[in-house]
Image: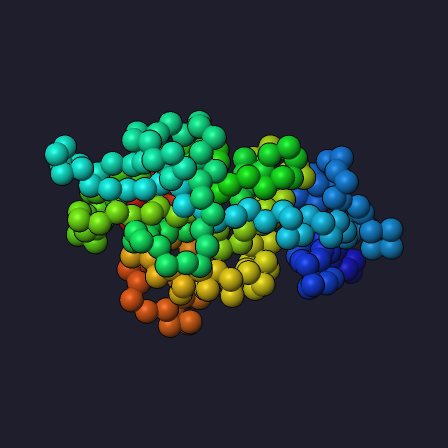
Length: 263
């Protein structure tokens, strides 16, 4: 009986060397067909792709940001968004400010709402692999379009109308786990999830620090099912307290009226 062939990608994540992720043959073939300086087929193990060590270097990290200021307008009796950079009411998503302000471990005057995404994809990089910002494409457009409606209708009891909120976009894995710049076509979810799970082993401590230091009022876990469960289990295991967290649909599906999900 012929031995089953396993296809894999060998890579480094900064100080962590010789890591491996098993992938399917279809994704393996698609990656090899793509002409990239980051990909090389191993000369001895033909079932292995070697990923250039610079792909997950610190220079490729997409920063977590504060994109919006959310405040309640007492005269109009409604919530309003303002851009963090220019403090403009009703900002347009296609403006340069969508890059937002860097989220740092600091004592912010406003309360914080964390939108937990997964990891950056193609739109979150410019000029090839130069990091730009989280949710810089369709995901960000859907957040921009629906955020007030969804927050005010679903989480109104958790929001205080007398205070302002910084809306923060946070990637637990702030690197391109999808390898999206290394193939054409749609996002390869199985590939993304496999790399995300491996990379989260090394980024989870920073993710935890961001949450513990900033103590967000509300955490919206917008990851897809497997990764959302991983985030929930991680925060439970670490006994992160005094947090109101809900799993909701990924922002690309916020057009739905019911976006609350069970784990």
